[in-house]
Length: 89
Image (cartoon, rainbow, N blue to C red):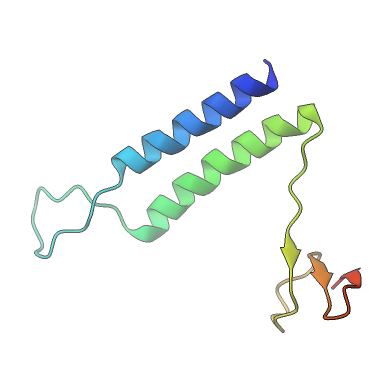
């Protein structure tokens, strides 16, 4: 697989997910095919994780740049302080 094939596959899957997304109906109908946001988010996360893993073979790594927000759960993110210093929280 070439890197361009990876990009094409990722784009195709994202477009497919977008095509499957529908606005929620204003009424509760038995034939309503909409999904909860959490389900859509999970499906996107699965596609993203699969393609990120495949991209590692090409030396591509995802780095999250994060400004200090005070949430303890945000560990191991690269943090940029106001002075431009980059550190790991």
